[in-house]
Image (cartoon, rainbow, N blue to C red; front, side, top):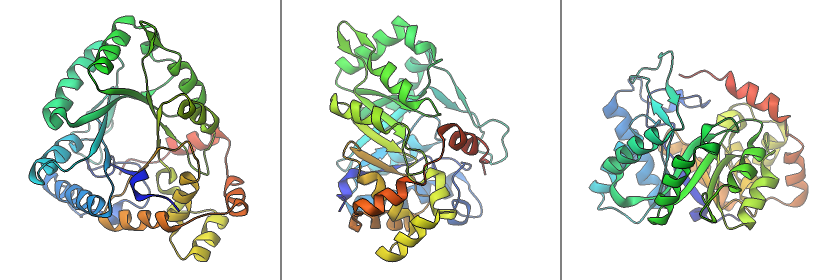
Length: 312
């Protein structure tokens, strides 16, 4: 059985009007105004906190998620939370669902400097983990010594510095990034990667990161909603057996991985979050886990499918 405190809530689906998660649209208000999305975010956060969830994950590119979270914490008296955020992408969607471009990526010292100030303005000194958003092998970060020094300085100030990954080469990125050092000290001590029963390719690398002392966060554990809206047959059968939704089964499979320190949920409503948290009461046996692991897709095919998901 999973501990609820192993779960965190990511605000990607509620901090901006458009996102790629399946099963999101029907959960949101018909008019996705700033005020409406602020109210949805507060509802999700209230439900999470009441259930015992204490980790919240945001990013500069999640629209106004940092702002919404900062306001919510101030209104609630700054409840004890672990807050992680990310820099590297800028939100450029103009609060439109039909924007041609929603976010723009740049891994540079200038972007880190600017976005760290923006994150601090929204969240104050509550940021415990600050991550490079979607690090890939072609990122200039790997050879940008001033940028790495700035990240090392941030780590020395007491903020845990990490990175997130996406794409078929996640495992290679994880291993390469964890080799980066400044002054003989590892730069990164946290990693946030996609892992789910359809896309488990980063598992061995994440286990290595965990063994090396890194905090491992798992994102997209429901495959951007695919495992709920169009679940494979074994997921559906196990959901019926355990009397929960397919989301709880898929999340229980992630919680069964001993290296998964924090499993990030991405609900679009308090109701979705409550359904997700039913995973805390599900324990899958070896035979059940094996049936789920058989659903794995080739990594390249998985990411090609994800790349075709529409922002809406």
